[in-house]
Image (cartoon, rainbow, N blue to C red; front, side, top):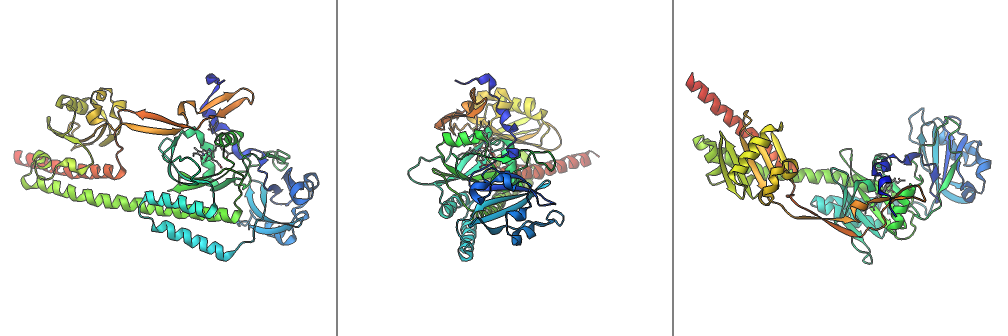
Length: 507
Ligand code: BLA
């Protein structure tokens, strides 16, 4: 049973996942006092890996556990603002990769068994392969597909997805590479609460995260509270940070056995995630995770580059039409004639089905539009009341209810204010495009309350669930908004010029 009154999705944002107090089971977390290098907190699984029980290690200097050659590199790290160095160390006849970092007053060292010795040649080849592949892709869409393909080839996950966030932090799988055995999730949408805010924020600090075995037994870090400062250990940057039980249940419901998730960052903001699933346990070692981080950095650079190129090309294209329009007006100084009555129509500036010019109280419409009365009301009752000089929406009826009457011609509008008066507008209209949004599970049932566990539980079913959106047009793109703003400036200066001439004549 679900208890809807107890389900408060906003609670998802509050779970303090960075101080979870648990480690994953494929390695050991050791925390020391960063000044004295005395072991202050440690994973209970120390004995299993090091052959020395955790009770014995607590309170000992780190050199009791690791060779002097390594412990000597850990001294005075924070003072000199040095990056702690990752090293391979032997303990208990096992090779470990030791990954140190500073967390508050503590020096945390993540110990992971080394799977293979690092082959510099192979590593080099992987990096140049990534660079060549991603810089060769032509469009942002190709880039995403190529990133999914190459990630799967290098790391061998059963499913690799490029997951892109929208303005509200819902997300969509926009590229996918997978084993044929599995159904495709390409095009599926997921609600924002699936990846709550604190989890998204952690990805800006720690960019590649593996969950080695979804069915692992969480390892307590003891003591829970640091004897140095009486606070829980901040594991934000730990490679082995344990996983929220809610997310574990989520992955179990998806039948996933292991994951790798990497941040795709654009202009300092989380743009999306590279999300990899495996249907059994799977561990990617530290060096390969570094390779993955390199891949996401190349991805981010290439993404900005390709998006900027597309933007510039489009601007050039619209720039030509704008010049034509301005020339048409300047021939005989008539704005209305120049925009609506000559070879090039202003509606050609946009992908649209109709447009309107409302100038000096007179209305001219072109193509598919609402009735003249409706367009006039739209201008005077709605647009004139707004501050923006450029206004656009893909679902006008949401903000201006009378528009529900004409969603077939103007679900979407882009409008600019002309000159300084608040009464002159140029508008472009877009009809409704019935949009089907496929969700990975019904977003109205994204969580329930688990009475036994006394907490929110993620949904059980991720089966495709189709939602139909009405009254929505295709979205206006950033370069189209820029094009509108550019023509607004051109037209406004023509209008100003004309007003000045009039005044000069009067004088
Ligand atoms: C974390 N949820 C995540 C992460 C992903 C998703 C990628 C980050 C995992 C990581 O850090 O390794 C979601 N994974 C997805 C989605 C796809 C996917 C959308 O593969 C699509 C294909 N989750 C819920 C609800 C809550 C919730 C209702 O569904 C809250 C009540 C919480 N998700 C939640 C939490 C984390 C998380 C707390 C952080 C886990 C952690 O870092 O410990």
